[in-house]
Image (cartoon, rainbow, N blue to C red; front, side, top):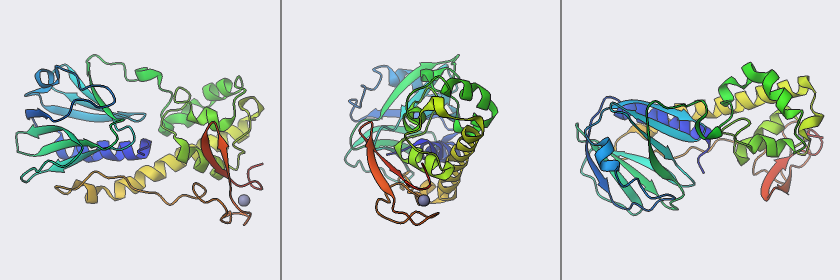
Length: 271
Ligand SMILES: [Zn+2]
């Protein structure tokens, strides 16, 4: 399931490949994604030029030369394929954009939890979807975030997953961040001291940045024609390591269900 680093990588690969190109054909194969494709999508994006691609949280935004913006969310299995040669449709291809240089961009999604929408400029990216601060800037907003967390009785794991607090942290990275910061996933927001919270924010920023770097280093593999923009699997420090020794203290990693989802942690290091 793509999390923020994967979406960032997809945006970078798309930027490398389609900025400056003009959409000369729009082919809808299946409009029924999580939400139906906008019925006017052909009219709105045809013959427009790709100006820029940015990410906010787990959303990608393709800014066009006209007033329109293509917004995509990859859901659980959404991915793009870039194809220069003769395009052969495969199962679960839903949308094909063809550009002036004959390159094709194909949206493929097995489970169809992803979606594509349109928006118009001017566009308020900061308040988009009520998303919180981006991981790359959380340290700058430490005092604001600390004031917020001191009012929260929820566990820090749940707070990290709250996209209106900090955006882009999913279930996997939440465990990784808490492990790196040596913070218990059950600790309540109101119980934090500022020093400990600062350590947590630094761990968060670091883990997401490292994951983006990993994605970035594999970017050339994705970008070759006919390759999928697949997802990389980072080596996790704690996630999915139940029963294996902790890298710091050799205690065995524990898994618990928290809010219906798995949390992996070290009882000794994160108490
Ligand atoms: Zn440990």
